[in-house]
Image (tube, rainbow, N blue to C red; front, side, top):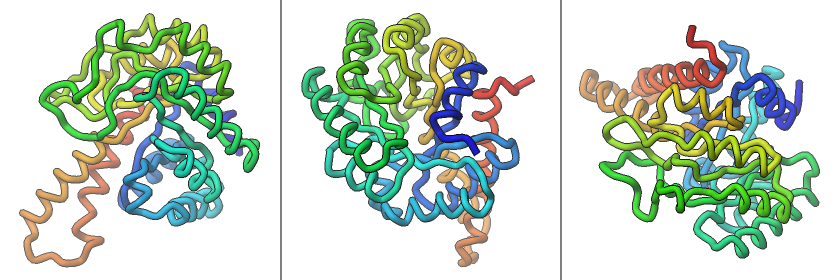
Length: 290
């Protein structure tokens, strides 16, 4: 089995992207793993701070490591959007394969300083851990919006600047960079998010010199996914669309079967709905739509 870093490098060489899907419960884990295994593709499971609070940090590690060991399968765990050194340390110490320090709301100098501190600690514990940094604010919640999230702007002046990305990477030593390139966390109720700035992605990748990560993938068009991946995005995050699929199926199931009380039966359609989302996205990320 290759390392996560090697899978990311291979994806970049092939102009594909590794799918990153968040979970809040074991239903989400099985939905993602079932499809990844069926398609024989490496997969990254993400847990945000809120999701980690719900699942448990060591419990999330135990779940993913048990799948990797039992099936000898390339499934990896990322501590998504971590906002403090203490929470980064918690995930690193617990055995996460990757962690992102999200200092996107900080000014550049503070973001560099705090990210560097996280990188140095993570590497001191596990030299092979993947550390990601974020530059440019795209919101924080995996929700459905009528308009852009508060504080988020997609004007050219508000997006990540290639020269600042280069400085940020050089001074922090991160392995992956998550830039703001027109993407937003969550998704618009219309179902179609703003178009991505593909030229900016290409320039950031060239100047930063490391693989890029597209956060806020829910609501992005398939065409934009493919263009972004070709331009330099090697990992794509999906969360909101999974949550919507889970909720919609659950509401319908409870309506159709009001007397059912077995959780594993109630959740069957939610798992199936999430599987459909995962399969659709992985086909796009790996250019398998034809």
